[in-house]
Length: 312
Ligand SMILES: Nc1ncnc2c1ncn2[C@@H]1O[C@H](COP(=O)(O)OP(=O)(O)OP(=O)(O)O)[C@@H](O)[C@H]1O
Ligand SMILES: O=P(O)(O)OC[C@H]1O[C@H](OP(=O)(O)OP(=O)(O)O)[C@H](O)[C@@H]1O
Ligand SMILES: [Mg+2]
Image (tube, rainbow, N blue to C red; front, side):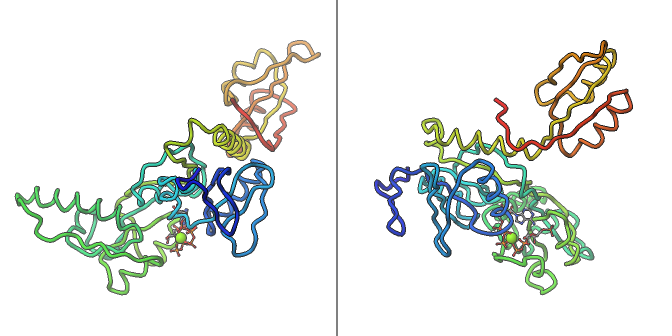
């Protein structure tokens, strides 16, 4: 529970509920809604109300900006949350990362105009940097300021790098003359290339994570239940079930192609010398796996979607 004894919001008493911080909008929100549905965490969210009680678990979903969720979790105002690793790093707080979720993947990169003379982040020392990640970037360039001064044999920094906060559309700041370089997220690179920028260093890579207040996880079976259910949904999203028949003489080769998450299930067929195999394969690799199995003589190769899973 949160630190205050009887937390409540909109006259809803939250004291006996697990508080779950959810990104209230944007690209993470859509994926999180899918996760919650797959984990059978049902709720009704009234329009403009940032809290929703689950109808089938003692959970209250609290809809917050992704950037704020690390602080709420670290301070215990909510018990668990989903946000990006970049948001946790920028918040500089202590939270337990229960699992990475496989979406919201991107890189935080130092970017400069393609026609600029800057080829590394060190070239930007003493210059002007625009970013939404000011804590991270100030720390990053402070270390570079010191390194460059040391390499020049100086005992003090000649000119500190200036880090300017921008809340969005950071990529426009170089062309508008506000900055010499930026630090912003890159997924496809479309925004960067459109702004005639290129990435010269990667500060960090990030994806969405399930985080927990460090004092809460071990003594709360409901948190473990939610973690296992979300893990099951992600497994079902990433894997498919592959079944096929193969001559026993080819089984060793087949298992090299489909080792499975743990190991394949093998059963004998009525037809002498043949076995039936059932195994999980990565959805992204399933077409290649089918081709390779066919090449070694496997037959009746089927791929089935997995609706949900519990692996351990
Ligand atoms: N282009 C992107 N590709 C992948 N992940 C992204 C991208 N932009 C932001 N993210 C991730 O989404 C999370 C939330 O980012 P942010 O708060 O900017 O919301 P958003 O989804 O971009 O919505 P908006 O920017 O419209 O408010 C962050 O952890 C961030 O790493
Ligand atoms: O490499 P790409 O696929 O182009 O994605 C990167 C862009 O995505 C995010 O912006 P977003 O679309 O969230 O707009 P925002 O700047 O308002 O956050 C981020 O700030 C980058 O600008
Ligand atoms: Mg954004």
